[in-house]
Image (cartoon, rainbow, N blue to C red; front, side):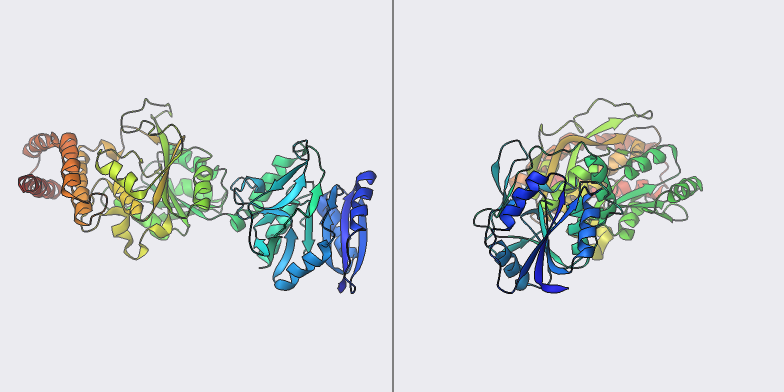
Length: 537
C-alpha cells in the first residue's frame, strides 16, 4: 500500500460528465509528497463490482470513489481530507453529507440530524443542501451519501448483496463501522463539491435494495425490540398474532413466547414457527404461573433482552408498521419512556368494532406529553387511554429490573391485581415522557373467553385504581396536594362507587370460603374506610 498516493475512482458511462469531473480534479492542489491517479471503470455491471475492480488493481492508500457527475470545487480538497485522516487513525471513510442516525426506513436523508453540505440538482435545479452545522473538524455519522466516498483503508464492497446502483454507500458505511472504524463528514465553510446528478432515478430497483439493506444491516443500525407474547391454551388467535409480529416492517426483533397452557397446542404451533424463523424463543411454564397470567407477563420481560419492549397479547394483532412508527420516535428523543397509539377493537372474526369512550382517538395528531401530564390524565379520568399491553412500547431501562416484579405489575407498596397495564404505564411515566400516535397501530380483540370478562376483575380494578391514587399522593407523583387528591378520588368514586353495592350482592351470593373473595372484601373495607377518613379530614 503506497501511503503517498491518492487515486480518484469513477464508474463511467457518460464520457462528457467524466471529462468535466476530471477537469476539476486536475485543478486540485497536490501536496509535494503526494502522487495522484485517475482510474475509470467503464460500463460496470454495478457500483460495488466496479469499485471492487478498481480497489483490487490499485495500491494507493487513499481512494476517492466519486460519481462521474461530481465536481470538486475545493481546490484544497486533498490537504483537507488528509488533515481529517491524520487526526484519528480510526477514521476509515469520509463523505460530504451523511446521517447521524439511520432511520427505520433505511433512507439516510430522512434523518433530521443529517450533516454536511453539497451543491446538488437531484430535484431538477441546482441548490445548496446545507444540513446541520457542526463546530468540530468532523462529525461521526452512521452513513454517507455515495456521491463521494474517501477511504484510507480498503474494505471489499458487498457486490454479493448489492449488485445494482443503490445502497452500496450505506452498506459500505456499515461495513466500516463493523470494523470499529469511524465514518465522518468534515466541517465545510463552503461546500467542497457539486453533484450535478439531475433527477434521482429510484425506479431501477431502489426498493429491492432498500429491503436488502434492512435485511442485512438492521441489527447494526437499529435497536433490538422484544415482542413479548404471554400465551395460554389457544392457537387460532395466536397464529394471527405471531404472523403480525413476524411480518413487521421493522426487522431487528426477538419474539418471546411464554406458555402458561395446560395442553401442548401452543408448543406445537410455536415449534412449527421456529422452523421458519430464528427470532422466536419459546418457554413452557409447565402450566399456569399464577394470578390470571400476571406472572407469565412478568416472566416474558425477565427473559427478554431488547432495548425496547412491546407486548403482544395472544389474541391481539399488530399493524405491520407499529414498531417502525414507534422506534423512529425513540431514536430521536432520549426523554421518552413510553410510546402509545390509537388502537382499534376487533371481534372474534377480526371485524372492527365501534370505539367506546375508553378507546376513542385521544388526539388528531401525534403529540408529546410529559410523563406528569400523561400520568395525571389517567388518574383524573379513570380511563386507560394509553391502552392494553399490546398497544404501547416502552424503553427497557426506564424500569428498575432489579425489582422487576414490583416495577412491572405492582405500584410502590401496593399489589396490583387487575390493572397491571395501568400500573406499568404509571411506573414508566415517572421516568420519562410519552408520545401518543394518532394512527391506529394495533387491534385489541374482544371475545367471550378472555379474562376481561371475568366479573370479579371489575371489583379488583376499583381497588387497584384507588391504591394507585393513594400511592401517587403519598409519593407526590402525579398527585401533589390535597386538592388534586380529592379531585382524583371523586373521579374514582364516580366511576366505581356503584360497584360497592354490586360487590355486596356478589359477596352475599358467593361461597364465603373462597379465599380470593374474602381477600377482596377485606380490600374493599380498607379502601372505603380510608376514602371516608380522607373526606372527613
